[in-house]
Length: 208
Image 1 (cartoon, helix red, strand yellow):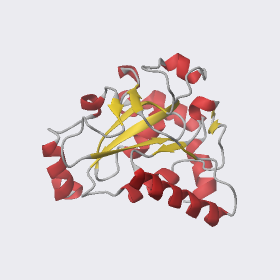
Image 2 (cartoon, helix red, strand yellow):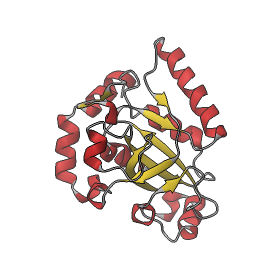
Image 3 (tube, one colour):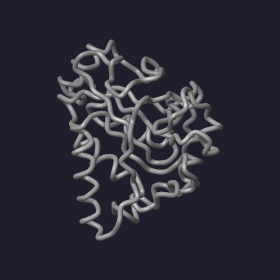
Image 4 (cartoon, one colour):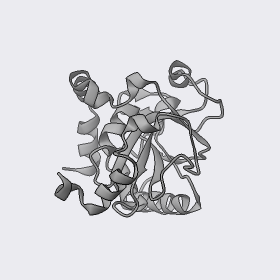
């Protein structure tokens, strides 16, 4: 296991005290003030946060992923208020990662492969503003990379990209029942993901 993870990630895990998503299920500011030295964070939205979380968790260099909400202005938004479009937030995932093991550019590449970049009205079977795709840069460096990456996607496909590059202030975690959902509820999660035809649509766009 250690050999597969690589020394840089093992060091990050030791630094973070073998961090898990549970260690970060709390409001988080854009400056990542709650993170141990040596770790960074990124925030992405690609529809249902169960799926965004599950898509990023296996990526080498990722220490933990938290499901939650970003992009709105209301403090401590409730799940049902978000999904009913009352708060301006979207379902998102906060990615805690080791920059020595995986770059933000690599996270962006992974994100694009797991989102429908042409659908700004939701994602897959989940419709409405709360499921719209977005990237939430935490600083100017991430914003510049996100904008360049989006422009590259537009050039690649020769069409507009519906993913919004938003403004991020605070990440609000969802309730415990939504954290690590794919691991804790594997049968329900797989039924949902298959019924949503998420992977079928991704293959249409990206191949493979």
